[in-house]
Image 1: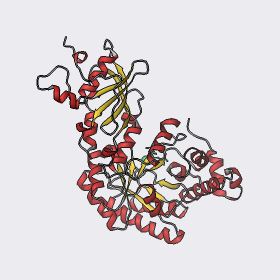
Image 2: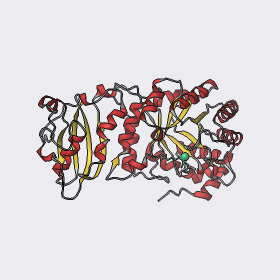
Image 3: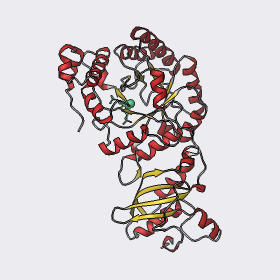
Image 4: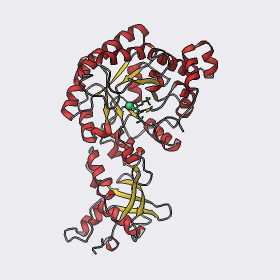
Length: 422
Ligand code: CAP
Ligand code: MG
């Protein structure tokens, strides 16, 4: 039986090495070797296969290349199963996220010597961070556009996610806007289906948003999903711009980094609303895959302006600490790149707004699909109730007190209380 020769390799295992953070990308992994494979051997295999090595010694690998480009394991803890690897920055092409992933999240997930491997975190040198465009708008740009200074943005997702005509869709969005909602978005799986054509939806929804702006005096954002093959996405984005829109939604995981970076580079004058559908296929398993924190860092490099990042209390998985860590990262300074507005979404209803503000403060966006369209009295009332719950929370008034003379909210509290998902 053929056995890998990783243990014989030199130059990868460097306990005590202190990487210069301007010259190395640092990846933190959780590693479980396969049976019969020593922890050290698996670690060397991961370092070799994600830099310059393969399963056997090769004659073409000179000492010069090894010294310059070999990835260095500088922390190795068999107990916690954590390893830290320093990758020489020369291994990477600045501005190219797909290349980074092919290197640090590529073949290493497939090698037989590992049972489980998870890329938990990554630290980049400033120079590398600044080789990316990052968000065009960021939190400040979105707040300037919406004229919302210091409260959370409140959004809704048109439901049902599929099945409405473009007319019905625009009508539903209009009711949300009229009820006090700032952003109304397409669902992640709505694109240009026969029953709701993209072009018609854009024209009708933007028209209704304009009417609602006049009626409410507030800025209204239509979050229109352009997810499609790349060239088609560019055409759809330009169509939104031509009809007066200011936001494009992209399913960033299913679309991929190459397309996302391509869109950002075109500077289309629309802020990028990032939906993360499919992320849990590789972010959820705590022993194998890539953490959402790593994905959030890459999406900020790629240039998204707003990113779904979890709720803690809603229907989607995501524990308190990792969710708060991502919120903190997206809102913190990072090289020369702008910040990203985190969005809480999934199984939320107005009764949960105090809990959301307690966890996340005011610098985020919160979305309600079922939580608005599931209101016993329908969409408009549901939207009004959500806005009332936000107002009460910002004034520090308990919802049940505020509900005494805000009946739309009263109905919500009778219907869902402040119940949260498990
Ligand atoms: C929420 C939602 C969003 C999820 C995405 C849905 O609808 O429209 O796509 O929030 O999850 O389809 O489930 P509801 P995440 O408000 O009706 O639950 O934000 O975790 O990426
Ligand atoms: Mg959805």
